Every structure is written in C-alpha cells, then in structure tokens.
Length: 152
Image (cartoon, helix red, strand yellow):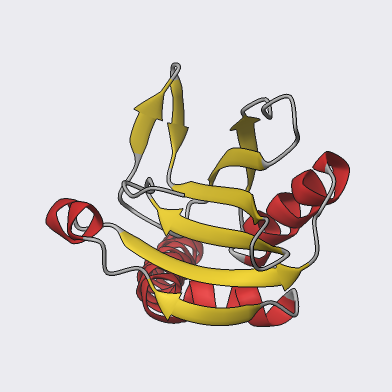
C-alpha cells in the first residue's frame, strides 16, 4: 500500500510541476512573440509596434497592422476571433460599429496572459480595434493587451 501511495504522490507532483512550467512558459512566450505570431498566422502585415505613451505608461503591449481595402463587419468579427484564437483565447464581447461601418472593437480573454482588466463584469486581456482609413483605402488593425489606450 505504501508503494502505491508513494507512486501516486510522485505522479501527482510530476504532473503539477509540468502544468506550472507549461503555464509559465506560455505566459512568457505569449508576452514576447504572441502578437507577431497572431498577425503572421492571419497574413497581416505588421506596420509598427504601438509606442503611444498612454500604452507604455500602463505597461500595455500593442502592435499595428493593416489590410488593403474596407472590411465589412462580419469579416472584422471573424478576423478578431481568429486573432484571439491564435493567442489561445476567445472573444468575450465586442462593440457596435458606427453607422458607416468604419470601426470595430472586440475584447477577448486568454489564460496565457496574466495581466487582466475587468470590463462590464468580464475579465479581458486582449483587445482588437479595427478602423477604416479612407485616405489610404485600408483597414488598420491594432491588437493590444490588456487594453489599447491609444487612438484608433
């Protein structure tokens, strides 16, 4: 009986050690390369890291990209969902668009990022904002964690 108990305890310790190491590595990986990888998986061109002082003061991470042409609401929602999925998360809520369909904002959550905010009673740590730029005929995309604190 002692052997079985020791074996069970050993297996449990090894299992939980692997789980904690996996969580730590995932959080480190997500914070360093997650956005770039999410953009690459969805064939988005990264235009720049968002260095707006409002983001850096809060410790937020943001990345910007663009897609040629104007995206419709359904395509924006689908792209936001794909970006969240690429980060190991899912959409929690989104905002309605203006009457001209020029912008879309979605909030998501992933356990791979430790820093979270509470918005409308829901934990979020991913934020995607898309807006149409008429002058350049492209849809600009900003993805940030936990929130985007800059203009879009």
